Length: 209
Image 1 (tube, rainbow, N blue to C red):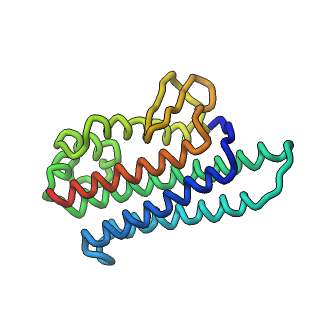
Image 2 (spheres, rainbow, N blue to C red):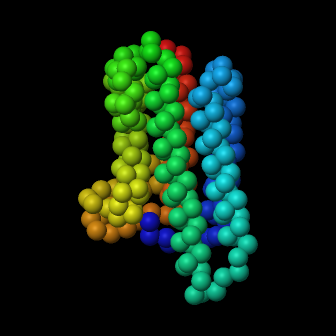
């Protein structure tokens, strides 16, 4: 990600807002399920704890005194911290979505993706959920962009391999082949926040089936 810096505390503030939101989601899911016996609330609490760790890292970096020569290096560390958060959270969501399908075998989504857990991934869950009306067309579009950026961040060091403009959570991320993805400094936090929100909405719809 090309880090055009908006301000050191802005990124921390965005991440702290995400921390508050993930706690609300975790508490909500705990109330909807069997509590400690259900791994799904634990997945939300794990996401919350992962965000907490990132807040601690950003708080640490925010206490650094910088010069014009070191400001860019510090900014890059912050962006890496939130990029790693984004990748980890999407991975946690993928694991939790597979658990949800496995633990609720009587749902239409489970029937669509099949019983072989080795063949289930987040993409197949999204497609099955869209086919049965659990996700809107807009939700699917955002998920597609989230997964595209996740894959580029993991496998291509955030270098785009195609031309595209991704729009997630009210921000735009520009992709041009052979160049770093371009977006505001809070991009990875917004992507993470939107992924968690979409997952929580999907989960709430799944448990009411």
